[in-house]
Length: 289
Image (cartoon, rainbow, N blue to C red):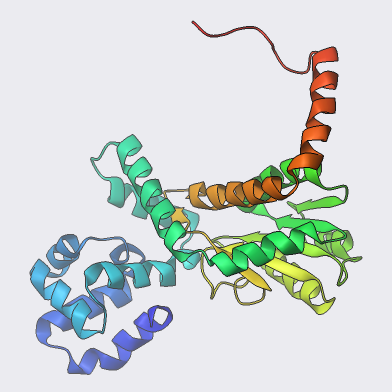
């Protein structure tokens, strides 16, 4: 239902009461702001009570206003411009302490991510990575930070890891042209969804490669096209998106892979520690006080 809430409002608007019609009209005209308002704030904006807004949500088929708000947010977040994002974020934070507001929001994203991650897809993804001939990691724009983080650690574990990041569509295809059915492709995609990542995933699937999508919604461009879908909630904090939950899910993937390759990695890191010590790679001073 959440992907059609605006069309549902348009279709049912003639059947609404006067107060409900004001709510629907406001959402349809200012969905970018309404999606991030509390029931109380939305009621004040249209001149109805908070309880009227809550009853309106229930009448539309939601369990309550929070579920309706979540549906609105998931519908509109990918369509907001950078300026709209900043305006909405400022409205949400208002006079609140930014540190508390953002940290509490991130904690909620982590909680929701834990509930929604498919454990079977997660385990299948781990097995696919372990058995892959080559591993390609796709992540462009803000998702490139996640792709780089994962590739940094996978390079310690596997001999054939390829990072495909911050490239245009043409260059991206040049980097993945050799992908085949023996390979695994891990693709990060979060709002605002990159079209080049989605096109790259479609190409990789056409070659028979296993695609592991790490995204926020099963209906996102990558969510609809991957072999295994790992969902992690992202949120629009302002100009920058919160990627705390996707990063935590990436950590979980690394932990699971490390556990399966413990003996091999122990030998690798024993050698690395000797090299790092010999060439002073890390500062070894005691900073404890």
